[in-house]
Length: 605
Image 1: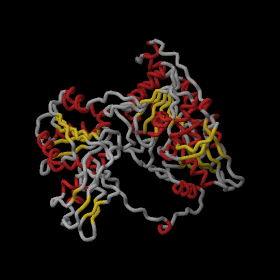
Image 2: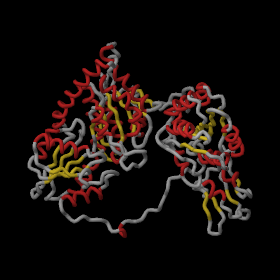
Image 3: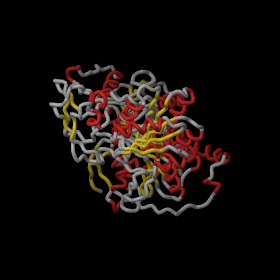
Image 4: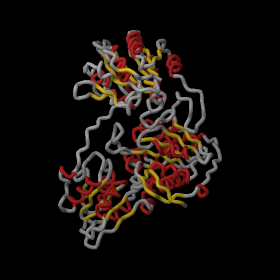
């Protein structure tokens, strides 16, 4: 054993390696991304790792390996689980031979997601056991426990950290590499009665799953991740039930308090440790539930009270004692506990809290997506259009002054939404923007749907040669894998022409004149047509020269600022504009926009 200072995601990756994981597959998404990347970085050489084309593919790859007896890990975020839910729901009925862990990172807030959905609720819905770590150390240990549990019961197991556990740091003891388990798989054994899902098999296995989960509820009451912290000597007849990082907040607030209530920490929200919870409730008059995000513990305790005939009032989100949504904080948890205990609630005075500057998210200086949006905006000026966005850096195209993202739902949805609008308003010019990684992940089926059902729309693929928003991971179009292998890249143009599109054009968006001309011409074509704006992400392509403003030539119109919104452009008090050289990438877009050619010096790559 040795001690390392680790991020939660790194700790879970090392936990998987220590458990002898054989295959790891997933799709990048904050806050889960670093788990798979750490496995790839710390790979001892015998673990297969891939960034799958999407979460569904990753789940199915891992399932196939688990059928062979291998230990497998799937990584994704909570909205990624939606994509993978189809195979997971059926996989619970089929079962696995090797241990299979599905790491789903939830994002209360949400800080970088579309939703605040709670994977604990999904666990109950899918009947898949869920482990819920509260710290970096526990996340490391629970990952190993999850593999053991999965293999023992023949079922996938979900590990559900939240953002503060994923991205928190702690110095923890971890196993040396020579202490890691080794898992040899026996290979796939043909047995259609086990591996082929039919209604008869589903009916039989559903009953077995229900019996198993009832049994697990009792077993997990003795699991180390579920426990009760005893009350102080002068405690009232009340308690607190909590989970995840909220447990750390609760303990921080109650530390050293002789009148502290007893605390139930739930590490396995499903199956719920009913026996432990019932023993905790005996003799208490009230319990406050502090959790993120759904009232999972709160509902479970109400059920336990009813089943055991315990007279105890359960309070929490459903009773308005804890806010129903959003991320818990040290302050919000402290306020809820103090109110519950009848103590004075300390609220920081406004003067005690420094006001942070307003910093709306914007596209990076020199981002080629800005040029792509601007070209489409110029080309379609004055026409009835809809611009359907998608998930990625380019969602920021909704911000002023570009204002080029009218809809955004989920990955790949913009392509189908554009079709829906066209079928109702055929006089609307429908555009669908999608990134190169998202195109491979979930854009191809929508494009096939548009072609097959004869929609009129322009598909705009914003190809910056990476998966930028989640940390520049490779994808099928980059020509490399996470394990470092050089592969033949999948051609977006080839895919689109294979679908049947006849108008597919590729252009550099930083060549504004050509880009605008291309949009005008291509958008006027009938049916489904595509423009691929190809220019590398500025993080990958370093500038060779930067633009600067000739102050004597600048007329102070601020057209560059008002039309582009590039953060490197800085209006001055006299109305003229200067360029922050620390941010400028020399993309030349502002040079092409300036009506008097007062900006020069950039050099496009």
